[in-house]
Amino acid sequence: MTKTHPLLTGCALGDIQLANRVVMAPMTRNRAEVDGSPNNLMRDYYSQRANAGLIVAEGTWPVAAGQAYNRQPGIETPEHIKGWRAVTDAVHEQGGKIVLQIMHAGRIGSHHIKGSELATVAPSAIKARGEVYTDSAGMQPYDMPTELSTEAVWKVIDEHRQAAINAKEAGFDGVELHCTSGYLPMQFLCSDSNQRSDEFGGNVQARVKFAAECLRAMASVFGAGRVGLRMNPGNRFNDTNDEFPEESHVALLKAISDLDLAYLHMMRAPIEQIDAFKIGRESFKGALIINDGFNPDSAAQAVIAGQAEAVSFARHYVSNPDFVSRIVANLPLTRLDRKTLYTPGAAGYTDYATA
Image (cartoon, rainbow, N blue to C red):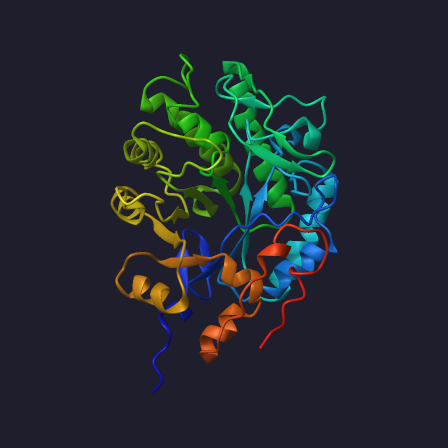
């Protein structure tokens, strides 16, 4: 009898049943229309990869003020919902499951992308160091953000609830909150970017409140068993820094321990002093997806060892739309072309060959 590959057995992430333990990680690919509407190219891209046990669709802005990049999709308008519905229908027709990652960029924004009529907002009026590529003006520094009032923070939380409503209408099986990579939830979480003195700033219990309330708002729509959280303690991407990153992330997990979320999507820590996977296992009682640097063999060993219920893959899914089939047949993997990761069109997006 042939032994089943550890990644090819089914599992449950909360209320989401997976046919296998292979997860396609969320990846910004900049192929949406100018207004953020998903298009047929995106439909084809995701349906090609529906062999995953779960697809986590790319970071998607809940409102235009939260947009980070050109040609990044949104989930705010009827056109967005219609475009995403074509994507989810195509994935479901292939027997796949797909959740939407909701990503508010906060201070990681530019008026060259969003338009000058939309303010870039943040927990505090502290400009992020760095630049972002814009189609209209090339590389540009991030905007100086406007500090959100307490009332405005609650409005943004409600915008996450509405984004979940829209995602449900678009046919997604759930939603995931993007709480890393220097975007708004992480800006609230980190001590350097959050200099507030109200209920959303100051000590760590206050700094975790924004992300916790966003998760509660999203869970009020889907049920907590269809809501996930992505984290990466120690991540300094997009000019974020926290004095005590491990303690902050553990505090957030404690603050939501009553929610019974579907899963925690934990990325490997970029610094040796932090064992992010251990934090996830010890501080989160639900299912764990781990990410970063895995191949099929190392992922299988992680599942066997009980390190996680599932493993997510990014670059392997870019260039191997039939990734799961290649695991089944033990076939070599195609290497990705980094030059076409963010360029418009089908090249390096939907034109990778299957084995």
